[in-house]
Length: 549
Image (tube, rainbow, N blue to C red; front, side):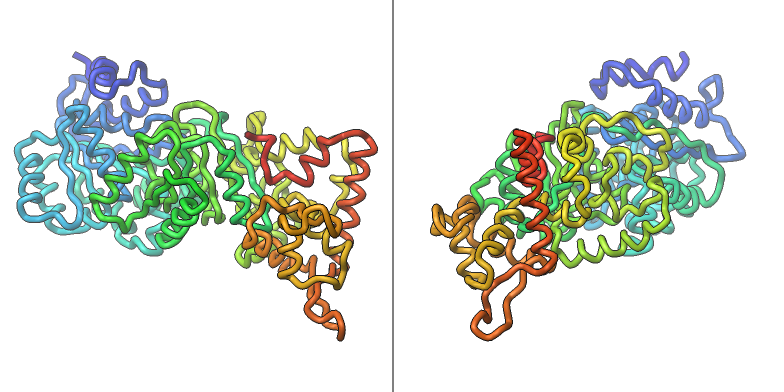
């Protein structure tokens, strides 16, 4: 019987897949054809078949190597970047009744012997490991006792992202795979622009030719947005109160996940935990199990959760920092909406943060003279182009689909009737979009050199309600959030402390702050004059993000 005729029944029986997509069938056919001859017997090709498979998150790339593994005469070696991903896939294989062996650091002698016996007896169809373990002589020696039919590198973009920094074992992975002489080598990833593709060809395929199988990068069910903020704490607290859940908040560091989870719980969101690669096995398993079953949970995580762990109903993905690359962002944002239903991918951008300020200045320098299709990745939070189009162009797409609703496109549609808004200088417009900016400038502008920063923060709260003009306008904010707002305004050069005798320590607007306040007041009057609350709400309260939720 033709092997390929067995694939669909296996997909239904073992993986619960009713029907494979055409491109899934194509990749599987590549593996089966290259590893066997037309009669289904082992062939001895002079050259290994190599393919780079670029499928968007949620497209079902794991089926493309799990299904052939059950039909090939020989092992399927799968190399994962993270323990969490290895454990997740190992669990799924066990649930599907597909024999597999798992090799990772820290295995005791008894555990190693148990896994090795599965390989030596021929029971294991797949071997799961990571680059560091693959680099050990012990595992290589074991694998050489067997026939490796198919070698798979999952999340292949990590070769370029991590191999030159803290995962040097990645750079030797291609050579080790080649030494095992597999019939087929497949590299899978959800995200890779032209430069990343070239890096994968170099490090995984050792500059040998490879077939490229790809589909469109677009995820129409994801709605992208960037929220500029002067108080990250306030914006995140407000956002979590309104965004659909389950929700992931990505952090760059392990301590960052713990601090974020603690802060979010303090805001009253008790169903919050953190996740990173430094947790013990039992801690990771417990957190994965909890979040997988949760319908309203919030998880603060590093990208250790972002690489392939499969929870389909995540409704919101939040970033509080700009990832290192567009590939990393697409990969992490792609955790949302894997069930095909709408999901939000939101980046919270602190306007006064040191990193954001440097990124903004660097981006402005880099973009000089560049067409919109070649703007650097660091421009993503500041672009006035469609976010979806921006991301897809960075991944090499020339023709981009119509936007299904990013914040830029929806805001432009709302504010098209307000030329005053779009005539503003971009930096001032971005500043005025941030929640609280209008109120802070309004209060200090109305009472220059009269109050200290402590008094301003107090009077903008409930204690100033009904008095002092703009007093109490930020009563819904906590005092630390109002202080954070004021400090951001000062960092951005909108507000300063008076130094003249008699006014020392009291606050006033800078010339830039006065101009921003003047333009905001003009915009407000224009919108009111035209009986348009839409422009006012969208322009001055855009961080509430009501137009994408």
